[in-house]
Every structure is written in structure tokens, then in C-alpha cells.
Image (tube, rainbow, N blue to C red; front, side, top):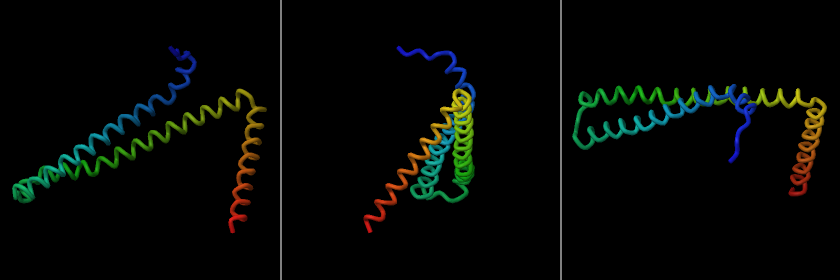
Length: 131
């Protein structure tokens, strides 16, 4: 069985709140989606099958309007919270990488730049030879 060491747990504490917020907003968006579908089915059922008028489905339409507004809000909040959490995690990892070994960080950057440059050259050559 794998045991997580204590330092790894401490390093993830900075992202836990963001992860929890993204999960909560995701669950709220899912509940809002299901609620929206139920209310829409309710309104369509009453109007088409029972021949109800606007007065009979007014409450369901008002709730449907509220859910239609809230669902994208929850989705947007989920995305914002997840993005902020990933920014914090990336910043933390990059800081640890640079402070752990500044000389190695420079060689990684140089090696990555030369690697991407070689890929661009190969793609350029392939594009020219296909013409």
C-alpha cells in the first residue's frame, strides 16, 4: 500500500480550497442542469398534454427562468475557481523547481527551447516537401 508522505500533504494544502470550490460549483451546476430539464419537461407536459395556459405554469416558468440564469453562473464560477487553483499550483511548482536547482532550471529551459526549435524546423520541412 502506498503511503503519502507528510510533506506532500502540506504542499497540496494551498490548492485544496480551490479544488473543493470547483467540486461544489460543479455539483451545483449539475443539480441546476437536472432541475432545468425537470422543469422544462413539466412545463411542456402541462402545456402540450394537459392544455394548461400560461397562468397554470407561471410558477414553473419562473423557476425555470431562475435555473436558466443560475446554471451558467455556477459553470463560470467552477471554471474561475479551477483556473485560480491551477495558477497557484503551477506557481508553487515552478518556484520549487527554480529554488531547488537554479542551474538545472536554466538547462531545462535551454533544452526545451532547442527541442521546440527542432520540431518547428521539421514541420517547416514537411510543409515545403508536400508542396
